[in-house]
Figure 1 (cartoon, rainbow, N blue to C red):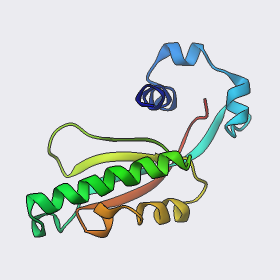
Figure 2: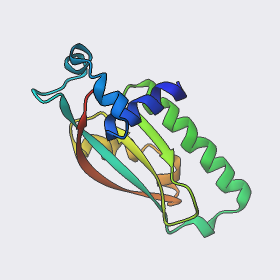
Figure 3: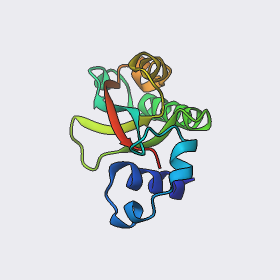
Length: 133
């Protein structure tokens, strides 16, 4: 699963010249590409929430476990195609890339996250246009 998600990230972000040489038009069409082989995604930037200090390390560990389980659930639903943290300990904590059509649908998905509910994380949602395959 990790290899698939990593491959999708490379293709989606256009970071790999190899991936661009291996464009699969049939796959792109199956994944909802437009005439340019692209489609809209919703990118969520995970930002450190205002309530982090309200929880003990044990409570934050439980919240993190729920956060990870929720990531798995959204991926199994086919709504979340990439998720991961940024390196370091900055305010910007990580990203989600959703395969959904609207900001409202992405917002509803982020609101299922225990870390969002607890105020440990907050999200900034942006529409993004990237490679479908």
